[in-house]
Amino acid sequence: MYRTAAKRLLGAGFTASRLLRLPKPRPTTIIPYSYCTSSMESPIGNQSVNPNQSDPTAAREEGHRRDESRKPRAEFEEEQARVLAASLRHVPRLGWTEEAMIAGSRDVGVSPSIVGSFSRKEAALVEYFMDECLQLLIDRVDSGLDLQNLIPSERVSKLVRIRLEMQIPYMSKWPQALSIQAHPVNVPTSFKQRAMLVDEIWHTVGDGASDLDWYVKRTVLGGVYSTTEIYMLTDDSPEYRDTWAFLDDRVKDAFDLKKSIQEAKYFAQDIGAGVGKSFQGLMNGVMQTMSTRGGRSSAF
Image (cartoon, rainbow, N blue to C red; front, side, top):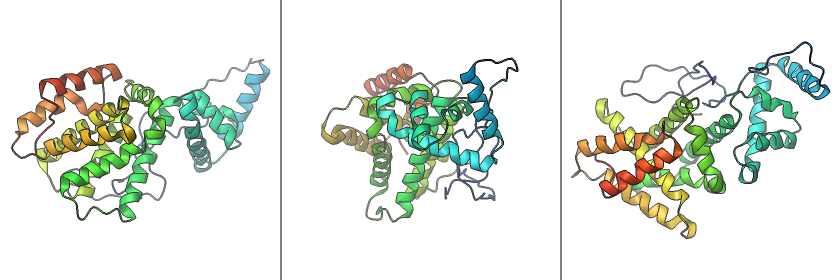
C-alpha cells in the first residue's frame, strides 16, 4: 500500500489521490483499494447521445458504452486499469496515444470503445504509468532495498536513479509524455504525482524536516529530478552513465552545506519543479539555470 496515501479525494478529472506527508500530519484513513492519481473515469464520460444516430459503427459503440455503464464501478475501473497496463507495451511503437490504448484494449479482449470513457485519453495513460512507477519504487523499498550503508545523498541518488531507469524502455517517446503532462488541463495531476514521488524519496531517506525546510527540500529535489530527467533525453552514453554522473553531482551539490538557502530558492524558482511549463520552456529554463549557476542546484 502507498505509505503516503491518506484518503480518496474527489475532484475534477480524477477520482483518487494520495496526500503528501505534511510537516504536521493529521490522522489518516486508509481505504483498501488501488490508490492512484490517474483518471479512472465513468463509463459514459463526457459522451453525448444523439437519439437520431444512424451510423451503424457509432450505434455499436454506443451499445458497448451502455453495456459498460451497467457494470459495477469497481469492475469497470479494474477493466480500465487492465487496458492501460496492456497499452504500455505499445507505447514504444505508437507513443502515448489513443492508438496505443486501442491496441491495449484488444490485447485484453475489451472493446476499443472503452477508450472513449477516458476524457483525457493520452493523459490517463501517462498518469497510470507514473502511478505504477511510484508503486514499483515503494515495493522495492519495502522488499528490503539496501540503503543502510549509504549516506543520505547517496540514498537520494540511488532512489532517483531507480525511478528514472523505469522510463528507459519509453525514452524515445518520453518528450511526448512531458508535453502531455505540461498541458494546462493535466498540470494539477502531474504536479501531485511528482510531489508524491519526491515526498516518498525524502521519507525513505529518513528526512525529518519541518516548516519551511520541508517545502524547500521537496521543491529542490523536484528540480534535481527534472533536470536529470531532461538531461537523460539527450544522453547517448553507454547505459546512461553520463546521466547518473550528472545526477550524483546535482545531489551532492544539494547536500553541500556551504551553499546558501537563497541559492536553493533561486534554483527552485528557475526550475519550477519541472511542472507547469511547456516542454521547450522547461528545457530553456534548465539550460539557462545550469549555465548561469554552473550547473549547481541548491543547499540544505
